[in-house]
Amino acid sequence: MTYVFSDITISIDGFAAGLGQTAQKPFGDGPVQELHRWMFEEPESNAAEIAAVATAEAFVMGRNMFGPDRGELDPNWAGWWGPNPPYHGPVFVLSHHKREPLVMDGGTTFTFVNEGIDAALEQAKAAAGPEGRVSIAGGASTVNQYLRAGSIDELRTHIAPVILGEGERLLLDVPARTVSIVSARASALATHITYRIS
Image 1 (cartoon, rainbow, N blue to C red):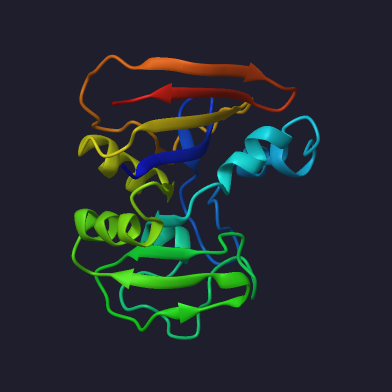
Image 2: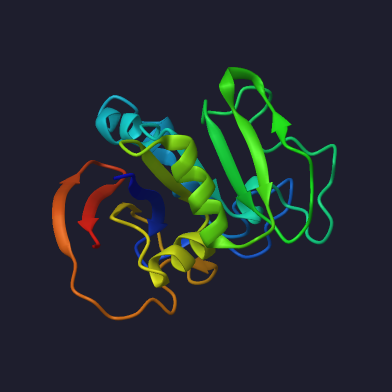
């Protein structure tokens, strides 16, 4: 059975991004640069968590994670990551607007799904295969939608020592439930806690 997980970095007050995201400020306003320091400034001490992020055979992401524009998709926008995105597999982007698939270097293809979260997850599961893994890559709104639907098996949070105060919050309007802790580990720039959801 295809396994569905999500890795997401949040502030200690639960925000995955600030307000006011633009092409120049992909994570919005506030001290958001503090969120991902653990990946770039301490890659050795966080190597296991960094490696685990890319273990999926297919990915799902929200429109805002793919790009900053709203409304119609910019046909010239190719994502935040340059010509060789880190996914190296099929990525299904939730969108209300149509766009042809975008083929990138390294085996990444962005496919834009207009039929909602269930359709995107079905396509990702088909691409990953029955024994594969699907990552709900983000952002917070997309992860919340899949948590509300009960579609995520494992939630991996990477909690950065920063308070954002406002922004895109994880676990917004997610129904109450009991989860189990699979693992917990602290480094200087993040506390990594993995939860079994279903």
